[in-house]
Length: 263
Length: 129
Image 1 (cartoon, chains in turn purple, cyan):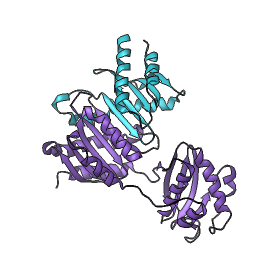
Image 2 (spheres, each protein chain N blue to C red):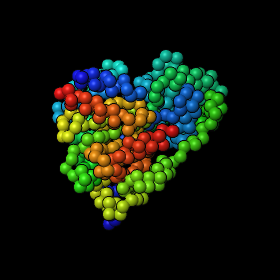
Image 3 (cartoon, each protein chain N blue to C red):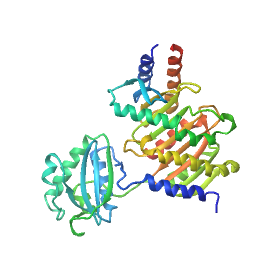
Image 4 (tube, helix red, strand yellow):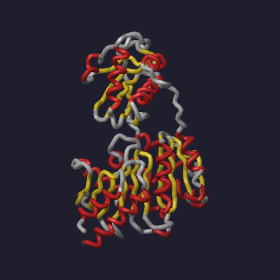
């Protein structure tokens, strides 16, 4: 049994408890066009039938997505969108396709935040019904559906490799596995058990610590004493890291990670 | 300076700070607030609960083994809870006090500045007590 097997077993259990179907995350983009493009990207990456929900500020919009196609806006919908809800989109030429873009652009334009979540859907439509994402991008006149994002594990590796002496020790965690370790060997040896205890409390109280649907990305707990070690837990998607760092560094490192994941 | 005045002064000094709350960790009650928009009671309850978990609850218990001899036996005094949409900075009001200050600000806030300003506000509050 490796040094990390106990931590990994615990992570498997805890991650299972943390992640629930339909967990929301933020839709990228700062204006209506970018948000519409990000929505098309989500459609392009969805193969199995899903009920995809965009929560635009407090208003939910539900969609049937399958086979990388937008199949329909689902009821209930409000305002001008109500007339479009529940009707399958037969092809890109149908007038409801640009009409849907219009109401979405209007909703996205004034929104402060948009969260996206997806749950399994027993689709009421055949899999060939709907408008494929590339065609949707063309009709909706959004620039690209290419995801230029750096994978979470690459961001994490880059962040950890730049830490140098700012960290006393760290464990990089991909999903439920400890993928890499760094820093003082004696401290690293103790960290698996320490991380298991910390993450037990973290995941156990996750909903109370982060009650709003935005994705958590940094958690720091510190004794607030000069060079005494503090805990810095950073995460992004499936990538996370448990870091011990001198208290004097925690604010700077937390900000650096925050910038890295929100840029 | 009253608690309320100290919280108002802190908030006005920090760009992007929307809410500062002074809370009792043991009872999980918010004692005083300063905010841009009057907060819902549910929001205050959630803030004080998160502060309690982070400084006196399971999160603090889980972090303490990492602190080594230098801070062995010391309570958690600072916690940061950051999401894509906000940053919450939680500071214990000195020593082993059961009171804490919670600051809610934008995610791009200068956290070191928020911590320093929060500690100054706590000094003002404790000096007036």
